[in-house]
Length: 270
Image 1 (cartoon, rainbow, N blue to C red):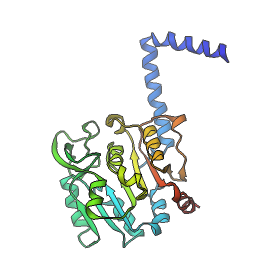
Image 2 (image 1 turned 60 degrees about the horizontal axis):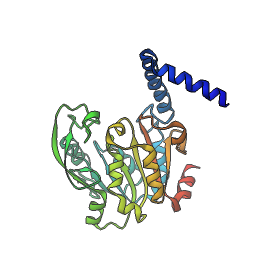
Image 3 (image 1 turned 30 degrees about the vertical axis):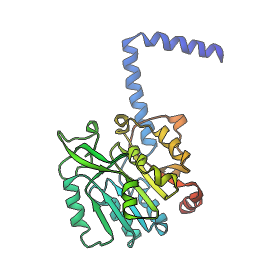
Image 4 (image 1 turned 180 degrees about the horizontal axis):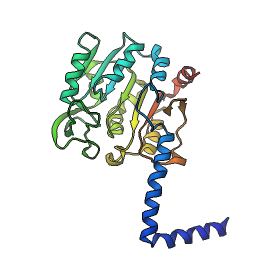
């Protein structure tokens, strides 16, 4: 084994001095990331096919209130309300077109509050790259958005907003922030530290490459606050494999649960 490693190390060294070999390695790595990403749910964002709809349906008896960060057109909120029609919801989106659509769509749903603001790890103001007609790539991260220009929007945190409304806890925290997801989690650290978020999910993908966050660190960070995290897949929840797969930057959804409620997740999956 030692001899094999020596040969492998020498091969790596020699190839690293070849521009052609490096170009081939980059192309090969990109294809490998695509394979790994698809294996982790990166083939579709359709909630009926990626396991999201089934999971929400099974967990719905435990959801009486929720927060939807990156509500966009309200499809996720609508999905949840189909299964928990009386749930109280707090929806966030800084997009003017998205907020307009949300207000029209849920005009007759009195238990929802729509907040026209981005969510992050600290209150303030940031440039927001807004795609027309509630485009799904609108983001605080310019590198992931199709929008050509930005406008300044208010940014708040989950901790601030929940304290303002005096909610005791959040049953379900959904985050879809186009790469800014971990920063949203950081802005809920007080709630998470106190165990006042029961269940949640966040989206992982290409935007994380530009946000300064990694999935590996996010899972460790959540574990230190008392949460277990699972990959959402069409076949149910799976244990993350960041030690083996590392960062792959393809679309995936991850579910986190307070450790004392882990059996609730397991029961919902059976």
